[in-house]
Amino acid sequence: MAEGDNNSVYQLAAETASLEEQLQGWGEVILMTDKVLRWERAWFPPALMSVVSFSFLMIYYLDPSVLSGVSCFVMFICLADYLVPALAPRIFGSNKWTTEQQQRFHEICSNLVKSRRRIVGWWKRLFVLKEEKPKMYFMTMLCSLAVVAWIGQQVHNLFLTYLIVSFLLLFPGLNQHGIITKYVGMAKREINKLLKHKEKKNE
Image 1: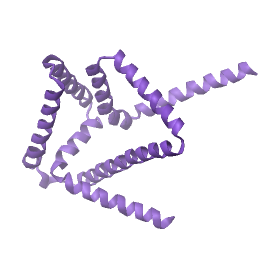
Image 2 (image 1 turned 45 degrees about the horizontal axis):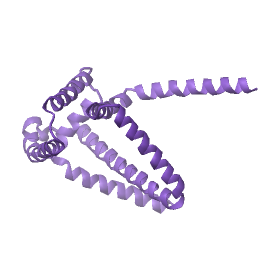
Image 3 (image 1 turned 180 degrees about the horizontal axis):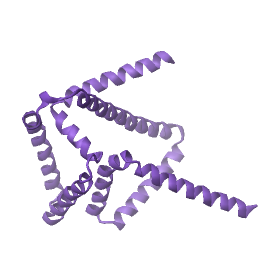
Image 4 (image 1 turned 90 degrees about the vertical axis):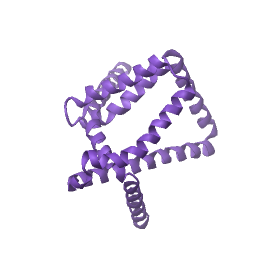
């Protein structure tokens, strides 16, 4: 068991080191993005939401086709992939990196690797469920997709995408400042109160 744990740790370290090497050119941008997403300054959340809202308003105004939208998005990614590694050191000065910044960059890459592993793990569990309990898998997938399809019919696609993107971008900051933990705790307490109240009625 210990040997398996050691292998897992070594593999995680190797994957993290590989990802650090791949993202080295993006290091300064990643660190700045991390500061924005974790709300290190009070004006970061409104600035972030302003940029997101403006971007979606432009998409709504221009109303591009799916093909045009995908092409422009991929074009933007390609340009960023080419320009950022070349321009970032001149703008931020990569030679000024501190030990703390290097450590934070390592933590970010490690978290990305762990997140990727979780997603792969969930995907594998889904296939295990399909093989071991096909009826449960079928019903779960059918109900989940039906709910998603219903939500898609009730809410405008662009607005729904805006809400999802906004939540994903705000999530790190909400988590960092304990807001999610606070409201989840409140929800749990209310649910426990309701359950206890129901048990008393049944008695």
